[in-house]
Length: 386
Image (cartoon, rainbow, N blue to C red; front, side, top):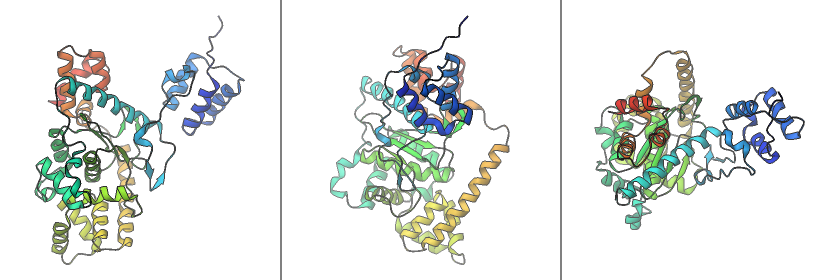
């Protein structure tokens, strides 16, 4: 019996090469090259294998035209202040997954009679203060019911605390260290640390949890400011000073949310007898943010120079590399569904469940929205969320 071979449009194959050739080994590249030249025609099994290796959806190979992946939130993406033309499949897949969740939640809230979210684009109600970073930060904190020195008063995990506050404000925060359910596809914090998706009814924030909780806190604060402005963006702040004007403005507001000038200086001056580097690592515990964000705040206040920031960045990079190696060696860990429940926003999971039970959506749709494979996984996730 002859093997069934499937001709794939050359423009699709060339797009696959341009999009994912770096992820392939020499044999894979040779196979793809032969398909492009027409020397060979792939089988179904070969296309399935190529889909898995490139992380390109299997159905894309049967299209007539190159898929439209013109994702608005990626248009102004930068890494280390350099505009990036080619986002990874990991980032694209995560954004598509979160957008699917957002579209559903936005429609659900409108059907349920929710009013437009007051936090999303809340800045429009305070236009007169648009050039005053402190006042903008104060408006945000007032809306969220937080005092200006909240980060000092809150003990424990500030990231979790702020995430819960945003949930009460109708802002959904999802975090993960890998792509959807693919634990082998680890998200690279050097490519992105977070992104924000503005929406009139269902604003979303995604946090790359391959950072520490303290670093994630700064990312969360940065993205909530974007939601306050009603803007979407992909975030990778390397703490340099040559950011665009808009990003500098966002970070000024973000810094006031986490550590206002007067409070920061007061805490800095309390640490007598310590050198600048020691002060920075001590203030990490005081404010609950990363040493690098502490260092850049101190730089902005002219308490240190750029050399100290560079030293801190180098020390943290070495520490991060050690942590990565330790994670690879470690075994066990929390229950899978405990981790998954943490990744998902609790209110989002509960909204999906209510929609299923009311008959508005099918269980199949619910499985897709919550990234579970069946009723067993669905029930375990619900139990973990409780």
